[in-house]
Every structure is written in C-alpha cells, then in structure tokens.
Length: 212
Image (tube, rainbow, N blue to C red):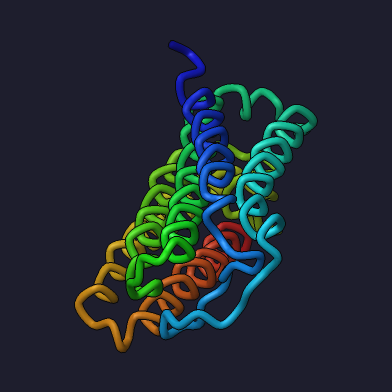
C-alpha cells in the first residue's frame, strides 16, 4: 500500500488521543508533564491541557510538514522523496507517541527513571534522521540547509553523505547513556551538538574547496 507510512502515522495520533481519553478519569486535575535532566519530575499542567498537548502537537507537526511540502519550490525533488518523507514523519510520530505513553504511565503511578527511558527514542530518532538525509535531494524543508549546500548541489550531496554518518554515529553513541546513566545528559547533548555543528562546518569546508 502506497500510503501505509502515512496511515500508520495517523494511527499513532488516534491511539495517543484514545489513550488520553481512557486515562482522563483516572488522573488528578493536575498532571506531571516535565522532568529534569536527572529524570526527576519538576513541572506540571492542568489535566486537560497536559493529556492532549502531545497528540495535538502531533497533528500540528504532521500537518505543517505536509503543507510546507506542497509549496516547496523544489517540488520535483520533494515528490521523488515522498516515500522517505512519509517514513520520517512516522518516526517523528512514533517519537512523540512514545513520550506521551511514558507521561501517561508516570501519572498513572508507574515509577521509573524518565531520563533513562528517553535515551532509546532519541538515539533511534537520530539514526533515522541520518538514514533519511543520506540521499536527500535539495529542498527547502528537510536536510542540512546551509548557504553552501543550497548554493551547490555537489556540496549538498557531499555534506549529506558526511552528515548522515555523524547523525547515525551520534545516535549509536547516545546509547552509552543507558550504560552510564550519570553521564546520559552529557552524552546526548554532545552527540547532538557534534552531529549538527559538524555538518554545518563540513558544508562550508566543502564549498570553500570547490570555490576557492
């Protein structure tokens, strides 16, 4: 089925709303919605807003991405990547649905180290992003969009091949946070910074090499 990824994304949104509706009568008027780097609860919201914020945000993110893709000037490239984009949207929906599930479980009385449970989805998301951008064609919505990649298609291609390795490696490196929980926040932060900043720097160097 052509749109199976998009249908799966919609299914995750519906399930997230359904889970909130089921949990609603079992929870107090104020629910925990935020945890610090140590995995300790330190923020709360009104029950209605807190339970339906994530599912609503999922709808907004999916709608925004699909809407922007329709008006991207590089529509031909976008159409060629349609299947990969739908898979990336599915990964994003899965990421938010997972967080929403953890939030509901915590407020229903299940206790765990929230920070530790957040490492696998972050690692998975970075690996998915790296896999996605590896062969991404120039566009204005997805990828490593710097003045240098958008000015030279060869630089775009080289930067995304290099950046894919950084994001995939960063995702794998994040998993060390499971083994070293006291260092988890630093491992995740360093991995994210290296992947993002390294890609930007590489795009400049690749451009400078071609246009010295």
